[in-house]
Length: 91
Image (cartoon, rainbow, N blue to C red; front, side, top):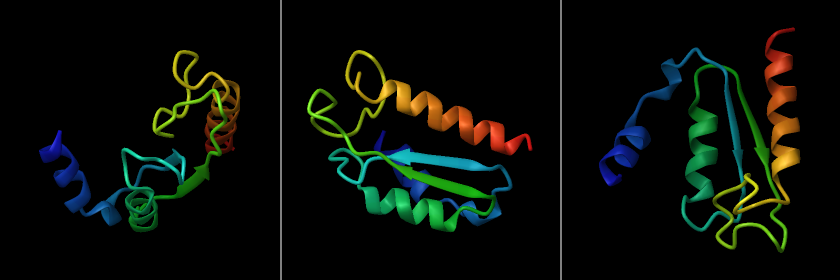
């Protein structure tokens, strides 16, 4: 996993042409949110960042930001946000 993280961190993403959605929590305790923001800022294609505020019943590490098992309070909002992002791509 560490090798994969290093490869992604070192990648020249300014060459990317694919639109990207960065959907994350600024309180993530597993992945440094500053690295996510840096990646989004360096992304070559269009990049949309959406930050999530986790609730009391969600992942205590603010890392698993959607899913009925770990972060049930975020699932509907994540589905809506991702659906809206994809829909805007098609316009």
